[in-house]
Length: 330
Image (cartoon, rainbow, N blue to C red; front, side, top):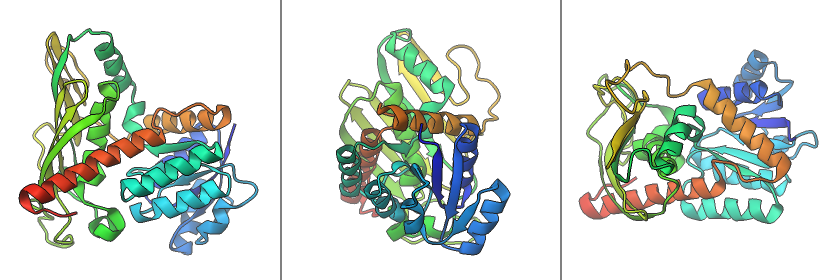
């Protein structure tokens, strides 16, 4: 099993990936990032032997089997491509790349090299999500007619490179909405999006005004997806958005024989208290275990390159639709 990992990045997501790797029994041999001093602090905190700022050296090291890319979105493509060229399996955070052209190149390169490329759509690894997917597939809820979901940050928004479209590829939609899009697609059995319509805007902002976003960065949006199985989905995205339900991610499924909701999960009666950690470690650990197992066996991970490509394709179409409808840009 591929168990010696180089981690690129030292932020919040990289921290989760390192803990997930260690929980899966893997060894993180190095961490690299833009600032070597921060990489060193991160390495010391997680007892990682090597750290630095030279990610190209890290991905070509002989004692590395796999690379985890947890860096700004604009680096996903070049870093993943370099790792694949060096013969390493890759787990790259979402979005897979800045656009589908880059994503297709990554997918094709990994396929040609016989390497595993897994994308960080970690909500596919939540037990309650898989359980609901199984119930839908079994027909327990009847025929699904429509869904509603959202991925947002409630009362806050990210800063730094997230606010730069050249580095992030977009705003709240590509950051949080993409999770909700992929989650509902997984629940429905991975149908194809046949039509995507969207309207996005910049209606929400930091109330303190301390970190104003780029004027072209979307902070709220609504996406309508028509799927190949006839289901229609509404997906909302947002930063600094108030949420009455009290959680930052939710998907509701409406079917001819019942309804269901995640998160929190329920299929009948009153919903449970709305206290939920949508970035819980167990799903990252499950994703890491799946990635490492597939790297060792050649099987396809649940969050495959095709999955990452399709999620990004839908987001790309949503931005295009919004530009046509209301002139919004990413």
